[in-house]
Image 1 (cartoon, helix red, strand yellow):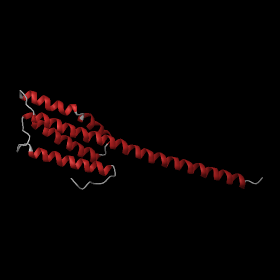
Image 2: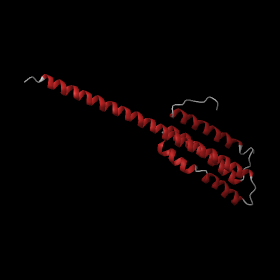
Image 3: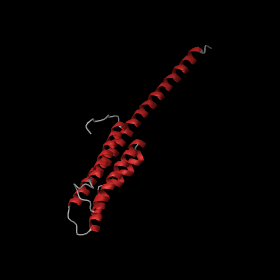
Image 4: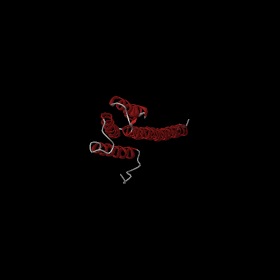
Length: 159
């Protein structure tokens, strides 16, 4: 009996199966990578939006009238909690790469420093507020840059 045709058929089948498995694995890895980027994009968007909303809310509280320092403190803290910053921050810590988490954490702490200043009674537009605003804006710009870089978008060049 001639074994060559049988061996050739088996070798061809093995090569075909291996090629199919490799192609499927490659396709799966590409889809997983694409999905991971989409998850990070969503997490980044929610986090940046929560920071922005919290910033606007604490500014509105700082501009408002409050009967007491404790009422102002409570209102500023509730503004941050209500914006969902803490939940968004935890999601960032779970899915973001280290450079994005570090930058996001800096932006978060910049917001908290401003929150604490407003809670103490620092006025909007005051000399005491100015360095806090600069710190927050710088940290936010660095965070956006890190996020855009991670998503493969590239810098804006306008910040």
